[in-house]
Length: 190
Image 1 (cartoon, rainbow, N blue to C red):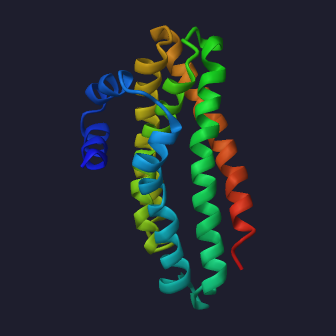
Image 2: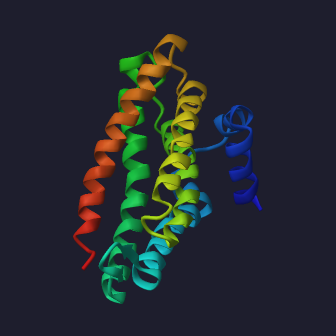
């Protein structure tokens, strides 16, 4: 029940939810099994179904499917990299905190990373139809940037005038890291 309530709160009433989150422990050993893993698995499972079962429709070539083992390897790699991304982004948020006059706090930074990824993880369910809904997945994931901004503002406490720049740097570096992780994951698709 905690998972559903937290997802609902972070998506529909993020300002109030970040205030609640600020007072909670941010231990990865609690957040991974209780929140991160159940949500982070959605995209890789949907992607596996999309590329190995549904297939990708290519004009003048028909439907292309990735073999079962290649799809499974891609899903496992994607899931592992999604879990790693949360941790790396949490470290990044914490490391950048002093640069933007924010409080250095690894637990708070990890919570910001974890909860701000919620829209992207949920949107990953649309990967059941690869290509067709990818723009929608991207657009829904953008809401995570807003959540990141609110989380940084509430949990890391930078001065108001530096919060936007702090968020922008974290976003830019997260995109670069995600591209690197995506390239690693693509190695497994055959």
